[in-house]
Image 1 (cartoon, protein in one colour):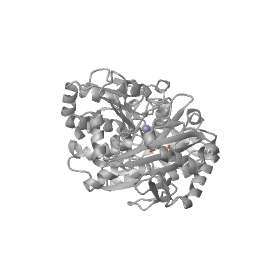
Image 2: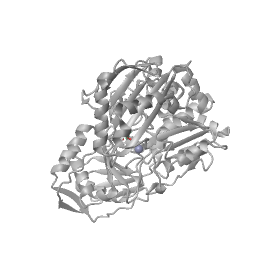
Image 3: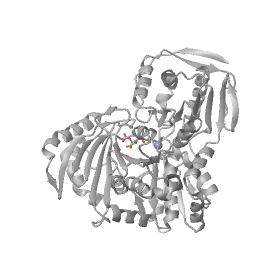
Image 4: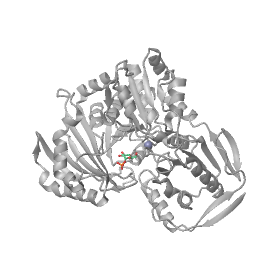
Length: 545
Ligand code: G1P
Ligand code: ZN
């Protein structure tokens, strides 16, 4: 094996965000761009000599090339063993599991999650740590600092590279062992250890019908193997099952806008009992019943309230957590069950510390992310199996499960209004305007609700004491209803402003309204205090979920 040291110069734009480094493919394709980042990771999380690393991605365009680069660089940097998903595929949850299963030093996950893929779209890379979770901010900042001063990287040539990713088995590149593994097998075993597969099999045996939309992304092979081959769902249950480099031209984000064909099917005449979808890298989930949409905030609350029915959670939950903008539905369950409930900033990494220290078992975000301490990422298929297990155990429809939940705990009407691709200055102006209005808002009454407090959310991590400020502007009412303004941290162009709206009604109240109607007063107030439409020149959100 020949190790080459290549001279390079830093790029200024390699700061990993909450979900790793995400850029247009053309940015990644610049000479030395990916290499600089990978070397900066090795230099920061090292020494990597002799360690095991996991590598895989969501199959999007540039996935395979990036893996070949990582192979050559890992060998040159002395990594002992690389475990790579066959065809270069690993869903984010499966990668997190493999890191933990093999007690690996960490792993590279190649994905831009739900962003479109293809030569004109996005690619991404992130490093997860030995606990299976995304690198914490102090590490990503150190990687960034390193990328600003890097002058060389190491690469090995020849010796069997590029490698074939097509067949499972072992090979050597220099002194480094490479194992190409089935991306599904270990993940499937983990799911089997948590859920009652026999009960779900019986459910399908009773004629229960579902449709799972893999959106031509990474969950296709996982869903086929688990739902159809193992649980006996009829062939064709999983649609758009073949991972494609451009996700078939779609936007692999499981929500009411981008998973439209699934939504139409579940709201159509021939609707099956249950519908679900996952995103590009398999960590998000959307849950639908026949003619029924389950809001992710409610989904988290319902999983918590029904966890005792699931074999893997029968011993009880340590606690629960939700991101700040996620509705307080789960808080009500936690209160009733005497569980601790944490409110964290947006982004999965904050849950990791709580899970590592044994303080929570379940957690979730309004952005279609739900998960548990079985891994350190959110997990789309896990949520789907959790729901299937609940439905099998209760033998009720999705709608009945949700409505009886609302009757017991009340309903937190919730919606998110996104204004995408704004000028950064406009987004800032809007945020400033909202903050300026805070002083006069406290104590005011709007449509029968009194504003209790307005603030800028800040979080002190109970485990490591780190403080995260500026996490979103909140207008909180006495009954728990809220309006939240927050700038997205994951967009790759322009600024996205998110407005989160939440209105609470108790179990005796009107729990059957359309959310947009139930939230209308709060929507009006949000526009009034932000002056958003005048400042942005827009008259409606880009996406409503
Ligand atoms: C978005 C979601 C957030 C999620 C993140 C990564 O981040 O809102 O909940 O953790 O994607 O999937 P945002 O663009 O809002 O910063
Ligand atoms: Zn994702």
